Image 1 (cartoon, rainbow, N blue to C red):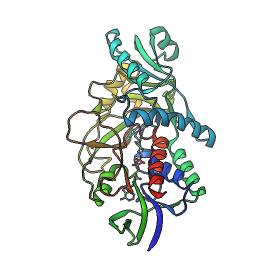
Image 2: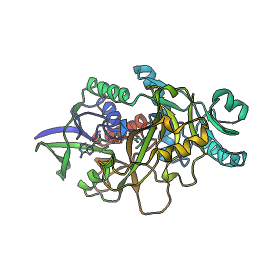
Image 3: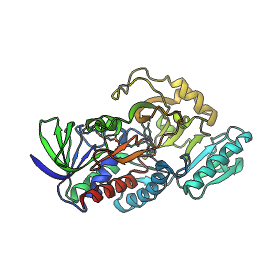
Image 4: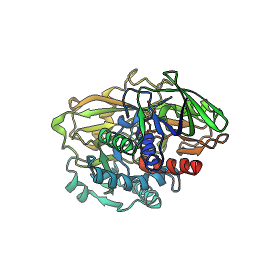
Length: 370
Ligand SMILES: Cc1cc2nc3c(=O)[nH]c(=O)nc-3n(C[C@H](O)[C@H](O)[C@H](O)COP(=O)(O)OP(=O)(O)OC[C@H]3O[C@@H](n4cnc5c(N)ncnc54)[C@H](O)[C@@H]3O)c2cc1C
């Protein structure tokens, strides 16, 4: 049986960030990824936005890792030549009565440590976004975008250079704790013994936790669907454009305009619980009309014919049964087996926060290994 120091389950941005950091300090560090390639899960089915930290409860793990992670990600992308752009974002009001809603977002962002937020009026908005109809907006200059596929490739390259072994097509199917070691069984029938295990299995992090007897959390896939605009409209907006968030943000931030690093403009994502199937990206798609109705309120010149269906992502939404719509990331040692560390419910801003979360997971692992 192979004996290892650390095994990370899941080769998305979070698992890769953790493994790259741990492998700087330890040998015999492995990552198991069920899919044939790294990053095929939520990590490349998202908006690619580097969030500035506007919406999260101040002091929450989401708020902390978002603001810290954004700074780390900008520095990382600049250093390792990962395509990214600090493109900026407007949260646009439909009417001036929404001033207090915008101000509440600004205050929340500032309490999270977001810098440069400013409430701007129609002259400013028109100068920067001639196609957007709005009398008042919150401007966030530090919001950006990143090429997620390049980020994954770069993290994987660094992890390998640091000595980590990244095994694709290898699913964790069972686990047992014996004599202070975790015995892991893979889909190839191999057994691996690990001193520390990190659960970064995204949509399946609740199921991996259950393999260790930890059944506190349940993940429900919350679908985020996108439409995209035809290529000739790539300059219809110059920034990321969001509506004022709906009162219940548990259901997403409202259909918004996102530019990606390929220069396309996406509408979405929406937020829908379609069913409990964590692989269902296709059934019962939202009609394009629904995206159009929201989007045309922000950009009145938009025509329905300009929209095309686009891709879908599944949020690993945590259900606690405890009511309020805000749920935080769960980043914790297992209550029974402290050498098993769980990252559960890493939905947005998990891409933004990935390097910060990865560092936190690595620190928890190191505390167990020393
Ligand atoms: C529609 C949408 C839009 C989003 N937009 C943004 C955004 O703009 N900005 C932002 O910051 N965040 C955004 N997010 C959130 C962000 O994408 C996630 O928080 C982040 O990608 C989570 O990464 P991860 O590594 O935890 O999960 P994943 O990328 O899902 O990786 C988990 C991996 O674990 C593997 N795995 C699962 N089970 C096993 C097993 N038993 N054995 C081995 N491997 C296993 C899976 O195959 C998968 O590759 C968005 C999410 C969605 C759905």
